[in-house]
Amino acid sequence: MNIKKTFLAVASIGAVSGLGLATYLFWPISYQQRDFAGIEGDVSRGAYLARASGCFACHTNAKTKGPVLAGGGPLKTPFGTFYAPNITTDKKNGIGNWSLTDFSNALTHGINPKGENYYPVFLYPNYTSLSNQDIADLWAAFQTVPPVDIKVPEHDLKFPFQYRFLLTAWKKLFFKDERYKPNPEMSKEWNRGAFLAKGPTHCAACHTPQNLLGGKDYGHELNGNANGPDGEKVPPITATALLKNKWTKKDIVFALRTGTKPDGDAFGGSMGEVVTDGTSYLSDQDLSAIAEYVMSVEHKNGKSVVKVKTQK
Amino acid sequence: MKNIKTNSILTAVVLTGIAGFSFAAFAHGGAKGIVKERMDLMSNIGKAQKSLAAIFSGKVKYDAQAVRDAASIIESHAGSRIPKLFPEEPVKDPSEALPAIWQNWAEFKHISDELKSYASALKANAGNDRMATNGQKKTSMGSGAMMGQKKTTMMGGGSQGMGAGGSAKSIKEQVEMLTKLPPMASFQKVAQTCSACHTKFRKKKK
Image (tube, rainbow over all chains, first blue to last red; front, top):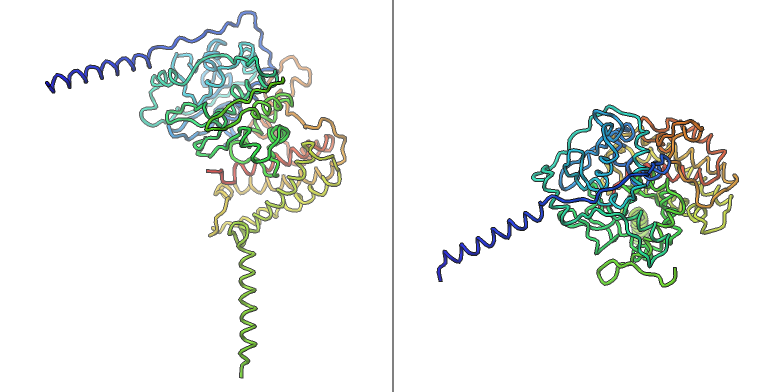
């Protein structure tokens, strides 16, 4: 047996496989294009969605009490420090030069106007579920934000995460640009809740665990995340966990409205801000819908399962 | 000549006293002294919030007097009472207080004053006309929209306390507004104040 020949054979197979994998991972992604013909955006619906989507919380520096939507403070993650950009209508430092298409591509494809990938700390994996009307509404609302001339620092990331092209591979593995698809077996309320929780209100983004590469582990939907933002331990909010702590649907709605838990404690940590800047603006129906969805997700036999009701 | 029996009994009594005192002080997770005092204070506020939550979430029937009683407890525990329990000297005992407290002392004191004022407002407004059971949805829209101006904007209305675009209303002005609103609005102000402190000044779960 010729060792040299065997070695060469194995090395060649390895190289070809590696090349094949790399080609697959980095092959340009073709995204679904959104069509906005005949759609008119509504400012008040857009403003509501902006609250539901958490735009204000990330893109404003609460610590320094910076101008609203003019950029967030440093956000430390295992990948480095991120700075949420200025999204006011400022032409130099904001999104004043953007078109509706640019805005849509950012939210639904995770691509900036230069065609580069956004980091998924910007939650396009959740915002991609927005409908065309939702995006048009948001765009209309964002046009009303006065320009603020503040330049936000570039992200300060660890090697090799500063290379945006690597995110193409991440997207190939973990991202699918698609609108929310209603589940016909579930009620209208449940579907609204599922859309919100997995989409704009993105409960899942913090409350679902993630793997080393930052991809969400949906087999354990809503079952908590030990490595949450700012190193927080994010608790599980499956029906199983909530019932164990004696939460009812009413408690969830009340907590999202006021930040007060049934035991009298107030949300501290990031959830306090989620309520103050986001969920406290939502309608009773929407909070009820979120509660309906969350209460349908059971965690048993080591995974999360949606409990399908036999009656609607 | 000393009476040995009396001395023994006396010693036993004193030692029991010390043990008993230490036991009481070591309750609440082993905290003692000032850390225990402030944990007890927060615990009392929490109990009052728990009964208010049950009322305002509709779990129990609305009872204006119960609301006043709970609000009263919170009022008496807030204001200058809280900052007094956070002296600058480092404490040896484990504490959930973050260094941010002393780095932002004025803000810490201000939030405690807000808590007292809003609890007092809740006490005063407990009998106000109640509307929806699940309370006030904050408005996403700017005041421009409400006043019928042509240009509607998403700024302003919701940005309470969020930077330059936010509400610069004083505590006095906020309390004034609450007198015309349902009791739930006052409760929400109290709850928001609890969160404001906890998000910035209390250790997050790690």
